[in-house]
Image (cartoon, rainbow, N blue to C red):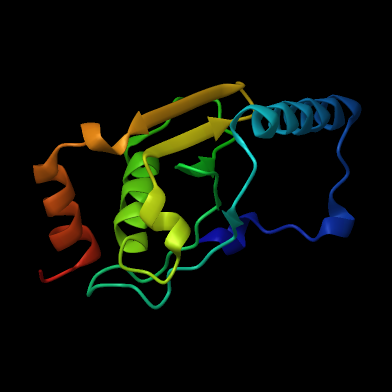
Length: 141
C-alpha cells in the first residue's frame, strides 16, 4: 500500500515554500511539547499485546497523562484516526508499559493546522470500548 508513495530521500527536492512549511510545523511542534510535554514514552510497539484481529500497533508518544498521535493533514481527524488511538489505549492497558496504564486523555496534534484535539477517556462510552475490544482488537473477555 505505502510502496507506491515511497521516494528515496536523495530524489526529494523540496522548494522554498515546502521548506518554510516544514520549519513552521517543527516550530509549532516544539511549542506543543513545551505546553503538553515532556514525552515519557515514544515509538512504542504493542506487538505482543494483540487479541485475535489487530496485526500491528506502533504508538507515537505519551506525555504524563495523554496518548498522542501527530497527524499533519489539511482535514480534521477522521474516525479511523480516533479509533487508532482508542485501540492503542485499550491494548496498552494490557501491556507491560506502565505509562499506558496512567492515560487520562487521548489526543491528536496537527502541526499543519496547529490544532490540538483531546478527549478525556472517562467520557468515552463503555459500549464503544467493549465493541472496539471485541470486534476490532479481538479480545475474548
